[in-house]
Length: 99
Image (cartoon, rainbow, N blue to C red; front, side, top):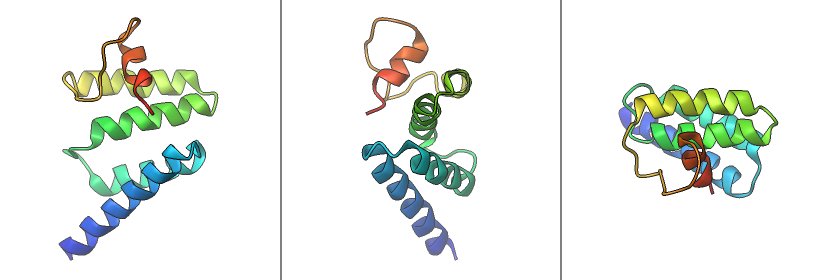
């Protein structure tokens, strides 16, 4: 039921967060994508997920893919608790706090 779906989403997010913090960006990306698919539209973590997915893409050598994810996130999430004051572009602001 609903409780099982919630538990699955939370587990996927926790697994993604764990891999991300270990700098295992390939594994983190897999978990983040699974989480995003399970969470669907309107997910309150969507901005955080996008920011981390962008970092995963960047670490995989796909700067263009990272920029695309960030551009979309900036459009969808104009105000976000994850932005920090930072010299540089709006993209840099999101990447800067991906730790």
